[in-house]
Image (cartoon, rainbow, N blue to C red; front, side, top):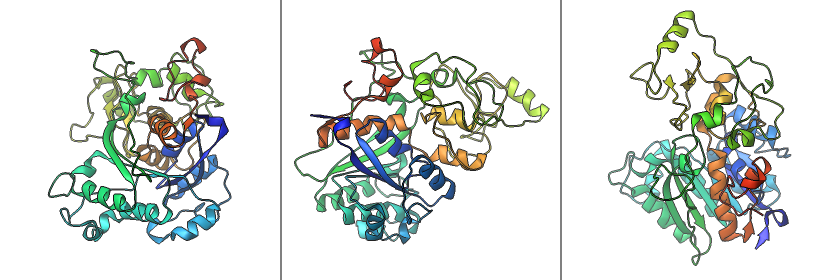
Length: 387
């Protein structure tokens, strides 16, 4: 088996957003990101701010429905070995019919544009991420869409595996259920999902799940400095990992609340919503537990666990395991949208490690080794073997 430094596998990120999914692949040291495609201007600018690639077509905002795969390949100048992406999904009104009929539902044509790129390019491996509701939203029978998709991918020669995973079981301080589908262009191989290293089930040995405090305990009150200097020492491996190679806290923006709102936030109890009918915002974080899923919400993602204020974009990024060095461009609203739509990179790194080992005969290194105590090197952040 090769070490990660001996070979880089090329990855193309579709519906890339800020690049959380492909960033997780990069963390393993086994993969090289060759491009990302998205239609949100600030996401594209953020992605290519961190990936210095000279791409004339997809280096600008693009709608997948308007892109020709040959034009994308010409722009890349090389073939991707792996294609990853999280196409939007809103439910299907034609459930129960053949996949060709399902394409008529324009709300969800992005699922099929992802399929089109796989069909035209035929990468060795693809990974599709989506909301867990893809199994049943708008469908007459549960899994209608997935059964049809699997059948179509199998016609292309792929063996396909899928599962619903919770990111908190993969060293992410956030409870976030996600649908993951992995296909490999080899009928004799099938992807085996990595064993979750973290669990709340104490009946068998495992790591404890990571909490809000594990992620945010070293972050001071925001001052809007760019970047804001670290003024509190890191106290957990997760904090040291997220701080690695960063000069400070980018995107740690304050929210100006009225005095009345400050008093209301002071009185709010841990684990409650300020507005009972709003499920996805103004929730007061419990520092002893993982956070709820970070959502695309510009009002207020969460209420800080010990201060009377909304969490900053950087704090939300921490809960998504986006490293501090990864600066987000654009307005505060744009930053929160990108963060809410991202795949947690640490979660993606576990999947990438398994893909590298199973299909490319590569032993990835662990980014955790860079920051954790060498005596604890066996507690690698990703599931890869410590080199």
